[in-house]
Structure formats: C-alpha cells, structure tokens
Image (cartoon, rainbow, N blue to C red; front, side, top):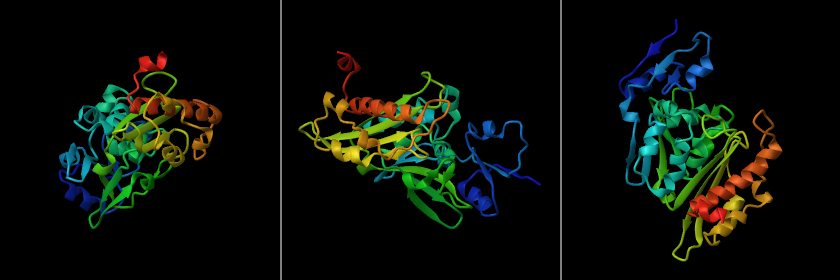
Length: 286
C-alpha cells in the first residue's frame, strides 16, 4: 500500500526517510506535471509543513537559504549585490504563480540542464546541505548535480539548505537568459557572472557559469582567469573568446542547435559581464 505523510518537524521527516524510499513533495511544480495522468507508484513525503526549512538567514560565515524557500522569497530577500544574478534568475522561473510555490532546492533536485537557479548559485560557490537520520554533510553544487536529472542524494537523505560562503558573496553579479520569448520559457542558453573589482577598477575575482549548454551547468575557469586584471568597463564585452567555451557540450533540440547555442552563449556571457560591471544598456547602444 502506498503511503502519504506530512511531517511537522525535520526530525520526524528524517525518521520517515530512514524507513524506506519516499518521493519528496515540496512546491510540486515539477512533481505534478511529471506525474500527468499516471497513478502514483511511490510513497509521498510532503515537506510543506516544515517551516524550519524556509527563509534566508546568516549564520556568521554563510548566507543560508532554506530548502523550502520560494523563488518569490529570493527575489524579495535583503541580500548583497553578489546575489543579484540569483534574484534575476528567480524572476525567470516560470510564472509568478510558480515562483510563489516553487522552491530553490526543488529546482536543484530536479537537475534539469535548463534549471534557471543553477548558474547563479554556481558563481556564488554554493554548497548543498544534506541530512539523514544519522548524518549531515555539505557538497559543492558542482558535485551535487551529476547529470541530466541525476544528483548525489543518497537514500534516506533530504536537502535542507543551500549555503553560500560569505567569502564568495563579494562583488556584483548579473544573469542573462535567452529563450524563444521573454517569459514562461525553457532557456536556449543562460549565463551568470559575478565580478569583484579592486579600488583601481580592475577585476580581482571573476566567476562565470553557463546553463542549457551541457548536461550540467558549467563554470568557465579559462575565461575567469582571463578576466582577472582587466578593467571592469565596456571592453569586457569583447573578452569572451571561442576557446573559453571549450568545456560546453550543447545538444541539438527543438529550441536550437548545438552550434547556435555556442554562438548564443558567447553573446549572453558578454552581456552578463557588462551587466555585472554596471555598464548601462544606454551606453551599450551608443
């Protein structure tokens, strides 16, 4: 017989997870569309009563985003400018209705190559906090998502938070997404950039991540290294070279060819770089 449970504390949830396999239900924005007209074939653990997993806090060394925090809450959160890319991504996740119930952890656990939140969290060097009834551990986001719809979650574990070390919450950031239309669309390509400049206006630290151009969103270390020492000005738009995109492996699908995605990625990275550097769009058009 299938089971449905709605625990009211994390401890209760972890005890249930220790009993056997469950399908976690949070916002449900991926759960229900994937189910469609098919009957349930898994036990369902509804975590919507776990208020302790919701909200953004500061533990001294990290900004901590509870697993049940919605995208609307992220967009409204009082966070440093380094999180601007994440806030921009939050406003691109489906419709307002989806943003109001869809959760940050759900977006990551779904592990879609086109998950809007992943590149913006990657440039913050986010870590994923996982708990079971007997253990707790943290994984870098790049080690948590293993492939298309694949994560490193072990049996009995649940994602409890996303942790951003304050040392990586410096500078400013931007997010650019390309789709067939402005909203309610799966991206063709997307990029997030975080830049930290010194007093002389030159880049001291750069983080660049691209999504929808490989099975898992990718950081671009060669480009990041090439950006360090450059002036954070309009010349950044020309900084992206073909060799910087060598780690990407885009596919051909109904939204675009792999070749087109590479061209698009180069352009949106350039736009994200300029956005993170604070270059006004009016200046770009001049």
